[in-house]
Amino acid sequence: MSQLKQFVVHKASSDDYEEVISFLKELAQWMKDNEINQWSYLLEGGDDEEIKRAIQQKHTYKVLSDDMMIATFTLSPEQSEWDQHIFGKEEASDSLYLHRLAVRPQYMNQGIGKEILRWIHENLGDGKQFIKLDCVADNVKLNQFYRDHGFEYLGETDNHSKYIKHLSRR
Image (cartoon, rainbow, N blue to C red; front, top):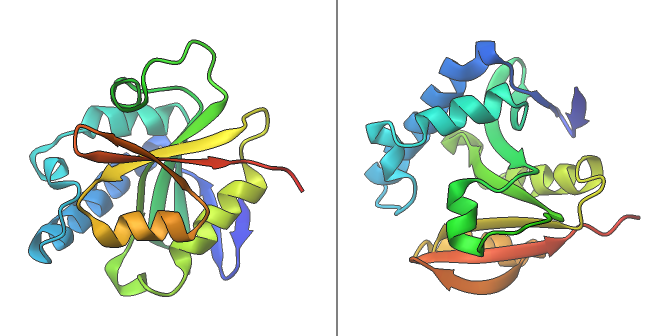
């Protein structure tokens, strides 16, 4: 367990599966309602098994404020099938793959996403050189968020922008 300013970050456990999946589906519905093209497949159960596997493998984190989950993210040291599709298969991975960074809508625009990225950079990644992620290419705001926070645009695959950030140690 680690502090993230006034928030606490810890790994999700198998007991958290329902809470995490419910949180992500609520956010997916919020995005759909607000005409944001991101994660609509989650509403039909897409990725449920991958999310469960990521929690079991201890790659998923919960961000809590007063015992309420306000954000979650998955950071995997291995490529998923999706990562291989987007970035190409890597024989020896020097990267962490960031998936499903999600912030509860009422906590958006308060710097929480930025703080999570800072926390990841400072606390995770030993032995890895890069963080890689993808997002829907036409989600302009999200693409700008990653660019604003030091991620380099690598191009596009299958309508998804690809980003990389070097994990330099201080």
